[in-house]
Amino acid sequence: MRKRIGLLAAAGALALVGATAPTAAADGHGKGYYGVWASNVNVREVYPDACWNYPSPTNCPGILGQVSAPTQVFVRCQFAGQPVGGNPYWVVVEVPGWTHYGVMASYYIDNRTNWIDGVPTECVWAGG
Image (cartoon, rainbow, N blue to C red; front, side, top):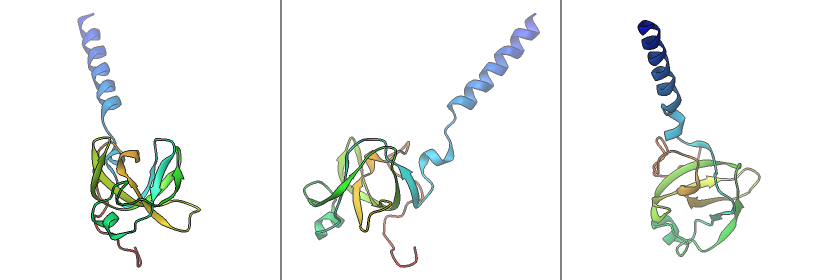
């Protein structure tokens, strides 16, 4: 009986490890599509220049529109700005069906960490 309990405990521990281990995609995978987890998230115009230098609602006053879960947006780049929900990063996104790209607080991107691994800090538009 002691042997059987030991095997069951070991199997349970392995199941627990498998259930709590994060996936690689949870920390980002570079430029690409990411889900938005909230409702009515503002996607803002990236102008004037103050928006590029330090994005915030004040520095990026123009609103292109709003997105809600389960929308997937294409994240092009990320950079620091006014923290939202404790997350200091903002992302430049393309929303499917929209003709313009915009900027939004990274806080609303469905990613386990504030910084999205593999997403550049500079936007490159031509060919990439």
